[in-house]
Length: 92
Image (cartoon, rainbow, N blue to C red; front, side, top):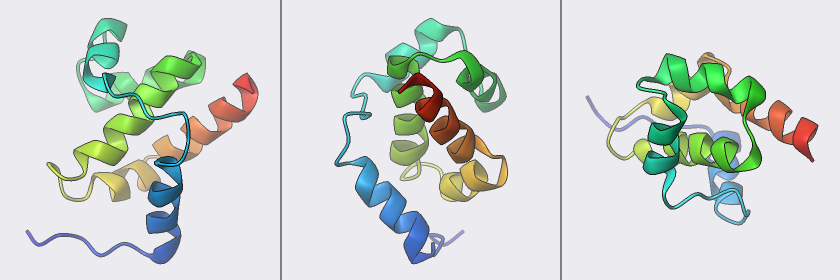
C-alpha cells in the first residue's frame, strides 16, 4: 500500500498539533496505563479523558500514522479527531 495523500486541511491540522501543548511524548505509556488495549477501547476513553490522556490519544493518532498508513483517515472517519476536539473544548 502506498502512502495516502491527505488534503491540505488535515495536513494543516496535524501541523498545528505540533505547535500545541497537547503533545504527549510518553503517549504509549499513558494509553497503556489507561487500560486501553486497542483503538476501540482508546476511543471509548475520549468521552471522559483528562487533558493528559486526551493529548496521549491525539499524539497516538498523529505519530502512529508513520507506522500505520491511513490512520489519520481512520481517525476522521471514526470521529476520533472530532471527539478529541470536542472533549478538549469541554475541558478548557
